Amino acid sequence: MVIRYAILSDVHGNLEALTAVLADATAEGARAILCLGDLVGYGADPVACVEQVAERAVAVVAGNHEHGALGLLDLGWFNPAARAAALWTRDRLDADHGRYLEQLALRTTLEEATLVHASPRRPEEWDYLISAQDGFEAFGDFDTRLCFVGHSHRPGWWSLGSSGREHVGHGSPARTRLRLLDGRRYIVNVGSVGQPRDRDPRAAYAIWDRDERTVTIRRVDYDYRTAAQKIVAAGLPRFLADRLADGF
Image 1 (tube, rainbow, N blue to C red):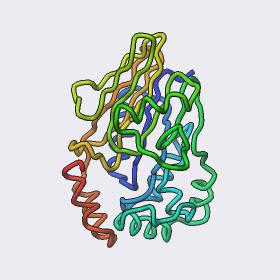
Image 2 (image 1 turned 180 degrees about the horizontal axis):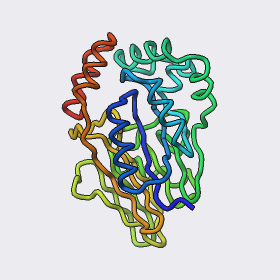
Image 3 (image 1 turned 120 degrees about the vertical axis):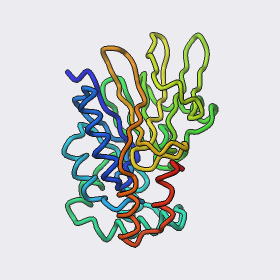
């Protein structure tokens, strides 16, 4: 039985960040990968990122950028840079990669956790969980003890139980380890591997340790300069490259 899972989200075609995170997860003793979607979009290596995650992950759900690149989501929903990246990515996915991404579910469960890209409430609407109220309103939309999400690119968590509510947002960097207590349920945003947006340029992911009953948000340095250079060389919007240095 797997004791320690690495939970990744929002890789966004950033192979340098993904490679660093996978190495860190291995060093931390994670023996299985769970992925919450958005393997593609923004970055210059969508195919390599899809292949690496597909090879290692025991569960993967779809994100809005998969659906955008596959033509399953109206690109009018995207901002101009995201739309340009989705169209660029679409041209680079062959039939096999497209079929793999197209068959991904919007949500799934594994042991005591629900996995979903955006929100367990109407996953196809791609709603963001950012504020305290956003998270607390979603507890009625899943039945498991845990729900792991991404999408906002900002790590944090919500907890609900008989002793009250707790919300730790991305503005609380000291709170990186969550201890799972009896009688409480949790929603955890694991942050973004490939495009953090919490003013910390390091890649973010989570380790779920079932033996220690903890979820830990980890930050990993990676070669964001090379990732940015590849975005520019690919002809993608420069904004997508420049933001990597600032984590925004």
